[in-house]
Picture 1 (cartoon, helix red, strand yellow):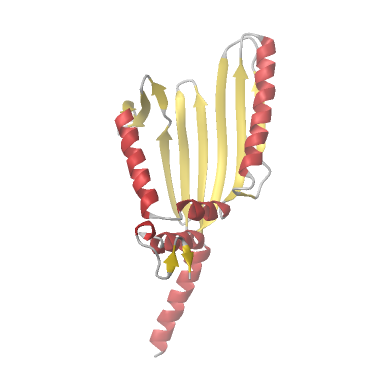
Picture 2 (spheres, rainbow, N blue to C red; picture 1 turned 60 degrees about the horizontal axis):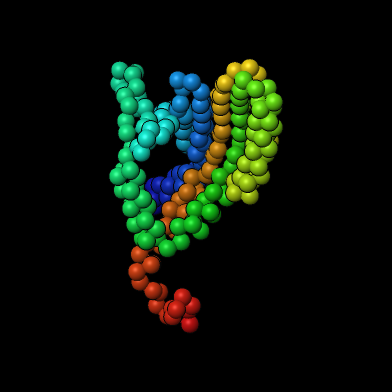
Length: 216
């Protein structure tokens, strides 16, 4: 009897630990000459599990989208993401929306649980004309502020976003670096996952007692 109680207590403690554990994602984006990728670090169970990987950024080339893929030989192989691939991705997304009725609501609830613990952006931009460089610099400051204003109601900001725009006069130049740390509790992901699971197939079958979208 004591053994069963001990096992039950251990399972309960484990569930509490998993529920309140955080998933932390650190993103570092570098966009400049010969450097177009995002470095991502994933931490789970309060840092007990760590994983690092790099994601190449897409570039448009004609009617296709091209990106560089890192290979085992540490060289970049060019890959093409064609219009056909984009159409297939759209079909998968449409099927996903048909399968789950309240995708937008669940996604919105999930994003509200995400905490932004760090957000820093640094932009360097320049044109040969000094006046146009000054105009672009001012515009980027305003754009950065608008982005923060738009994101504030979506996520929980636990930090003061830091932004920097550095003008470079006399040359055509552009570089962007971004550093962001976001976290969410595993328990919130579990709850949203259960909601998605319970929401399966609702568009094809009305609930019992529901007429024209309204219950009796």
